[in-house]
Image (cartoon, rainbow, N blue to C red; front, side, top):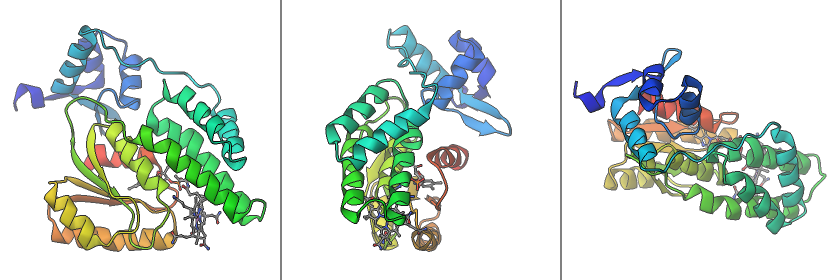
Amino acid sequence: MERAQRVVPLREAADFLGVHYQTAYGWVRQGLLPAAKSGRRYQVRVADAHALRVQRAAGTPPRPEVRVRNWQPQADRFYDAIVAGEERLARTCLERLAAGVPFIDLCERVVAPALRRVGDDWAAGDVTIAVEHRASAICECLMAPFAARQRRGRPRGVAVTATPPGERHGLPALMAAGSLREDHWLVQHLATDLPASEVGRLADEVAARLVVLSAITEEGAEQGAIEAAQLAQAYPGLLVLAGRPGESLHDLRELTRMLA
Ligand code: B12
């Protein structure tokens, strides 16, 4: 096997990088050091460890992680802001955190919990449809610039993100796009409600290795599973992942690192 393609255990990569194992593990969790799980251990490509060492030597060390001890107050503050329609306050909450928190955590720990709470309020009749729409519109607007950020480094390949026909919940697909970019994928984001044929044609045109179909309703998930099967049959070699209610962006990241 070519040297650059060789993989080594994370512990060995940490030694090579001159840092403690826990530091290297933190970088993996933040998406700064690409790694794939093999059994219970992480494996790192020599080329990726080398690229990170060069980057650190050039004086651009990984962004320091902001340690958030308790996420609940962050999610609560963000929830209060979006329910009140306070877009500027919501923006401040996110921007403060986004300076040192991985995008995937911003989604999983702050924005998604706040949105789920808005959904519960709506189902209980405690907030109006208009308030719920305003809250999700604020999230969509604020998340877009963060989701558009491309992590530098050797790309894993091209990925296409969308939702299946009938699934109008667009934020999970936007979050999927952002977290894949953070994990070195080049993403073409198609937003919501597309037939498999259209997704497949575009994926083929842009030589995508991965298609992600996000869904949070049962109907959307069923449709996504049907589309995924159709696409996988029409385009052998293309990895198609369809999300289901209750799954997370960490599940998505694990799946792509394992299968793609
Ligand atoms: C905002 C919202 C809307 C907005 C969406 C706007 C937009 N731009 O997205 C609008 C107004 C369009 C809407 C419409 C409807 N909605 Co709505 N909506 C919501 C709300 C409040 C938030 C949605 C959201 O973004 N959640 C946050 C996401 C990001 O979190 P998540 O679900 O954990 O998603 C994770 C995964 O998807 C994962 N992920 C993403 N991609 C992938 C891919 C893979 C492969 C993997 C593994 C993981 C993964 O990452 C995400 C982040 O953790 C939810 C409440 C809720 N509980 O979510 C209701 C909710 C989803 N809606 C609901 C309903 C009923 C509807 C309507 C039917 C209402 C109606 N009568 O018209 C329509 C259906 C429209 C349609 N056909 O799709 C119900 C669904 C019930 C059900 N079990 O099916 C909910 C749960 C509200 C409730 N409590 O009842 N909605």
